[in-house]
Length: 291
Image 1 (cartoon, rainbow, N blue to C red):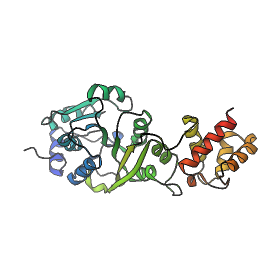
Image 2: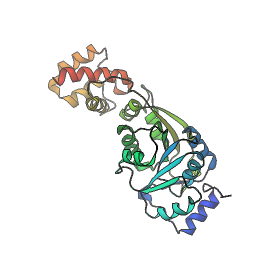
Image 3: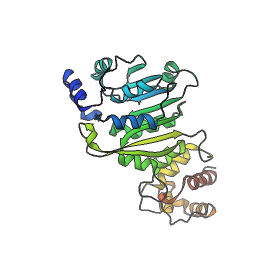
């Protein structure tokens, strides 16, 4: 019987065996709490037929728990020092493949095609490094991969921003971007004490389930996201002022009329607008200003 990787003792033994030193630049924090790993796996609803993509497996603590449940796990690891470590720690599992590559530069569509069966349920499950959380999540969402969902351990503050509702201080362009592609909820908060080395902040497990259809119909997706970002340029300013700043002061009258037509009070701030209101606003702006 193999001893689980995610215990303080076994983690320390592996690190010592390979004389491994943590690279701050790679945001390496390894989990040493089995309960939390089990919660992550169950939040991702990993079954015997599930295919899993993992990002940043570290020494394989989460990978091992996924391998016990899933049909296959494909893990992207950027740090070449960890490739021999993973070959050792994951040797009992023949359903794991480690790819030595930066996921941000990888063609994930191609990897899915090569490694998983057609129509297989695929989940992305990861303990993500803090410094690249947003770019990785946005890549996974924007590329519209054939996946069912994403369950990730990320910085608590970022998880709260992604899952935020309109009218709250955390709600912003990141919330809208993520919720356009997926439904978002925070599954649990994770204290910094369950990591080696300890990070400076608490973490949270975020669950994103991919929508079959976006919640709104858009005339132009790129323009929609541009409008959303513009509306949050300066959070303390009104939607009217932020739009003027973005589209130009010479558009004063048009913007004023468009807001009236959309029944959006010009004195409101971006964080009070729902995704539906943003869709209506961007569609109207697109029709009137882009003709």
